[in-house]
Amino acid sequence: MSQHLAVKYAGAVPRYTSYPTAPHFSSDVTGDTYAAWLEDLPVGQILSLYVHIPFCQSLCWYCGCSTKMVARYGPIQAYVDSLLAEIRSVANRLPDKYKVSHIHWGGGSPNILTPDDIARLSGALRHAFDILDDAEFAVEFDPRYLGEPQVRAFMDAGLTRVSLGVQDFNAEVQKAINRHQSFEMTEHTVRMFREGGVKSVNVDLVYGLPQQSCQSVDNTIEQVLTLAPDRVALFGYAHLPSRITHQRLIDDDTLPGPVERFHQSHRAAQRIVAAGYQRIGLDHFAKPGDPLAECSTKRNFQGYTSDEASVLVGFGATAIGQLPQGYVQNAVPTGDYMRRVGKGELATVRGFELSREDNARGYVINRLMCDLEFSNQSVRDRFSEVSDVLIETARKVLEWDADGLVERTSDGFHVTDRGRPFVRSICAQFDAYLGKGQAQHSTGV
Ligand SMILES: C[S@@+](CC[C@H](N)C(=O)[O-])C[C@H]1O[C@@H](n2cnc3c(N)ncnc32)[C@H](O)[C@@H]1O
Ligand code: SF4
Image (cartoon, rainbow, N blue to C red):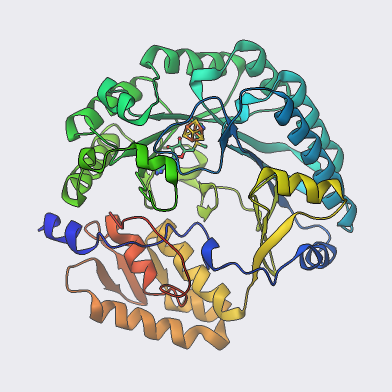
């Protein structure tokens, strides 16, 4: 039965890290729009900050992140100079020095930065914003290129949570994705950070990679669990070779099909849950006691977060920000981003101004992606004037479902255990933009 579902729901659907999703952003939203939105930000609003570092030391063939390889450090240092300029430029447009509860540096691999640049960047953020004493500072790391001086620099900068890329420890899989990373190297990285005082360790795993089998995924999980991570992210490999050209280096014949992918994710999830982790939304797991397991979670561009700030300010090439009025995205090519910032402009090239209906649909999709349910009353309370259309859609979802993916509750529906792997396809029923424009999405399993 599950196999039949895996085939049925293998169609392409978004990952819903935002609603509407980024392919629907438009160039009508410019730097001037962003400037006006920043000026209107309510004083006292608590912010979340994202900094994008689009550089890596070597190319993983599966990679879907916005990054590039560099042979010299010069371009990275120049990019950090641009980040500092952008931070000043955004801060100057804000009516106040805002409090910050959460900082995330992602990439690429932020650990490509030298200790000096780590200090310069974190110093600039502290100068421009009022970072709360208990703020979370999370960074994505590639354990293959990380030394003690960088670990110290990040600890000095206030690092609280690390996210380590692992994917799979099997040698055949690593060869097929051009990523060689031993368990010992990963274990050493975890030890360095824990001894340095980091509070929380997240490990990223991927299923659906070339040469992967249920057995290789099982073995990787077995090893990862010995590291006792606080969180595990288990992503389905998004293979889009027509858009991401380096993914063509992966032989399609070595990729598991939808049924095998389904089994890999199912077995992996069972194994992680059996080890005592709580399942969060689509693809995350957290130890009991971790904020992700204890608080209401939210889904944003970094995945699942316990951060409560509703405004996200993004810095760097490709970075996306979320303000009460809508989304803004910076120029993607680093050269274009740096040129705009160099001229004293904001680097925004596209975005999306949200209507009330967009906000209501985004709320329902976010709750489904996080809690696997929502109540009609919660939609009425927040979005009374547009709630009817969503409640009608919820009714149609119950009608549409012939596979036991959702179940009626006293006031809405919830996604069943059977439906959880297909929650993106359920969310898609609430997406008014799906199928419009040129968006390409990965398989729904
Ligand atoms: C920015 S990287 C993490 C940090 C560091 N660059 C590294 O790879 O170790 C973010 C994560 O995205 C996931 N990822 C990258 N490309 C992906 C793809 N095509 N499909 C699914 N997950 C992917 C990987 O799990 C990766 O660890
Ligand atoms: S997976 Fe990480 S290290 Fe590999 S290319 Fe992508 S961002 Fe860089």
